Amino acid sequence: MTGRLQKGMLTLCIGFLLTGCVTIRPDLKPTTPPMFVAKKAPLKVAVIVPPSSRSVTTLTRIPTACMDSSAKFEAAQYGTVFEQTVMDVLSRMYEQVEPMQAIPPESDHNAILEVSLTKVGMKLGCMANPESYTLAEGTFRALDANGKEVWRSTLTSKRNDVGLIQSIGGIDQKIGTDLSTAIGLLVSEWVQELQRYPTKQWARGGGGSGIEEERVARRDSGDEERVSVKSDVDDPPAVKAPKKKNAYAVVFGIEKYRERLPKADFASRDAKTVANYLTKVLGYPEENVVVRTNDLATRNDMEKYFGQWLKNNVEKDSTVFIYYSGHGAPNPKTGDAYLVPYDGDPTYLDSTSFPLKRLYEALEKLPTKEIIVVLDSCFSGAGGRSVLAKGAKPMGLSVEQSVTSAVGKAIVLTASGSDQISSAYEEKGHGLMTYFFLKGLQGDADANEDGTLTMAELYNYVRPQVEKVARKQFNNEQTPQFVANPEQLKRGGATLIEKGGK
Image 1 (tube, helix red, strand yellow):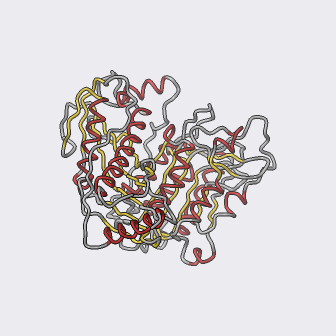
Image 2 (cartoon, one colour; image 1 turned 120 degrees about the vertical axis):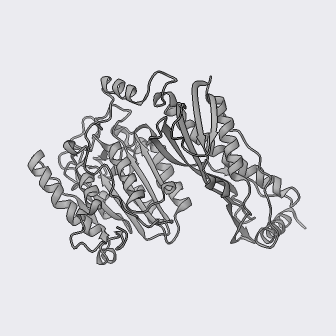
Image 3 (spheres, helix red, strand yellow; image 1 turned 60 degrees about the horizontal axis):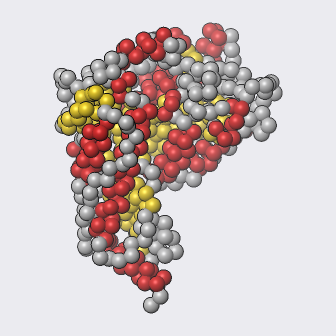
């Protein structure tokens, strides 16, 4: 029997083993990711791992004889391995780390970190398709000493490529090692975020710069996000939204840019508020909502979440919501529209920014039919929430086809026409379109008061409100655009709030 045939028979045997009556318990051991810190920060940090992390199982795709099947491993101690890895890493970063069951009502901790393992996945290849890998996913929150959320992020590990299993003997150890590595890579992703946003900058004490102190320092340095205005849409209405277990959202808000571009006023605040409405009003699970703002919203982040993260999670019956607040840019030569990430440069769009058509192409490949895209940006290059390369002239640019004509099955709401600019609504502390979008979700867009809100209803409310304020206050024309295919338009685009969900 040739080596190739032996491997094929082995894959077949493993497939029957995993899909049959035999259950494998992977031999999991903590895998500490590489560290990037030189010395411990003088902080006392509380760490919370919710009980839900301890019941995570892994779904394994097994191409048995090159025909996909699947099996679930019996619940193993993934949560325990995850917690041990987190504690090991944090003990190297901070002087005192204390595990806790819940957020303490009163605490002498400098900071609180809540970490959740939400998914562990594995794909085993066969001879015709030898691609094999493991992945892990988690949700991470940082809280100040008073329990106030400072930032939240849903992260997916880098793909841990693994080879074909060569023998049935030791299969539990092999799989356990691969899954442990995936968990370690997930924690490594999180550690990198912690280091990009050092804890001592927002924690109480420890570095002499609590949140309020840092806000003052940032304001004095001209780097303060404009959040002083309290808006009537900041707090979502008190509703009991039914959970949409299979709903996923990617939310980007970029106010400040690395390349000294003009600020997109209130963009990061827009993103955080929209994400809050998604979970509180529209029923999206918190662990399914990715929020990236400012320096955490790079081109690589867009590649990762618009591409692989959605591809890994979205299924046939999923709902997908994409929100972007920040600068757009046109390519004067091609007419293509680009989203400008934190590290974007309008002079080098192709290599530093994210083409809108690539976003639409990625969404088109998803198996689901319900996709909503909301863009509080503009692509004219004439100002507002758009930028242009030095020396280029905005006159005559038209990116309408790039923005709205190639959207495929996605339903798209944009803040303005292709030759217009999108404004910030300073007295309300949000982008002009986003403010009325949120106002509509509060119930103002439900004109017939039937308790059901569709994207078409929301657009019919948003458009005249935006046009009126833009004309009166800014002496400017801003007309939001709504695009959906004929079949979608018959049912109002997409239903955001179901009757009885209020």
